[in-house]
Length: 350
Image (cartoon, rainbow, N blue to C red; front, side):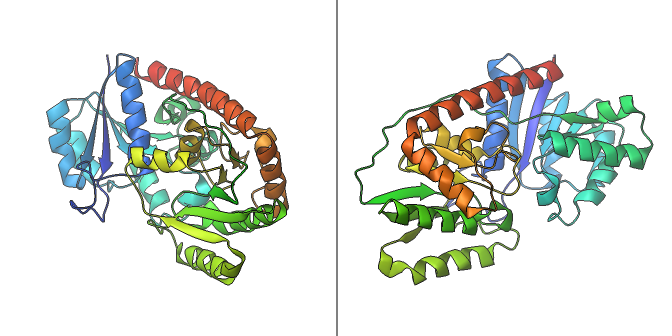
């Protein structure tokens, strides 16, 4: 039987006064925790640890004695594995990538590191998206002159899991304003500005003031111009009653409570592999509009073209007309996707 150990890196801006003891209140931690819980519930010996840096890994592996160590995302320098593989020769190391290639392009050392990882006998690269797996498999097969069988063994698909704990909520149309959430770290590929324009025009068409909710606590990958433009847009329209509301990042339970206060969620993003934020909104019974080509469990009837504000407006009107149907079929689709994810993980580790 496999013994699995997930290891994440503690956030760089960790502050004991602000952050929980795990030191990592991010989507990456939540993603790993969901899978850790799922594996344990299905009888797999699984643990999760948060490391300060590379130097913690040996101690954590010695402590738990896993057969498989899953390093979540790219943070362990490849040269460290020259030591770790000798210290723990029976361990299979899985480097788990959480991005599609457009996002990965912003990670300066990604291709170098992934290429270097592939040179170690006991290291496997995993992806949580089929497109990314195909691209990485081609790259490493070319780099290492692998056979198709070797390629299939060294690059694997391990998709995201999400707990199937859903709520429902009534949609309130009698308010003078509408709360539209476009949550997620502020960065260009999250596509906030186009979605803000669509939300503004939609609110104007239904005769309501817009409250546009974002997470402005994390600005990543040249995201400063994005938040500056959002602020400027709403400042210019302030006398029309529309508001941009910035929320700081919260522990998971607090964030779910915030999600439940929303009327509609927007996740028409330009690059995604799963989208936990969208799943959080759906889990609270909040209808969602997303990009059908990027979020694998999205429902196409309620999706939109991410670069076409009119397409997003049309989807907003459809969702406003059938909010409960939107939430219900998204929950059903998410359940189907995560059932498949659980099967893939269990089959791999058994």
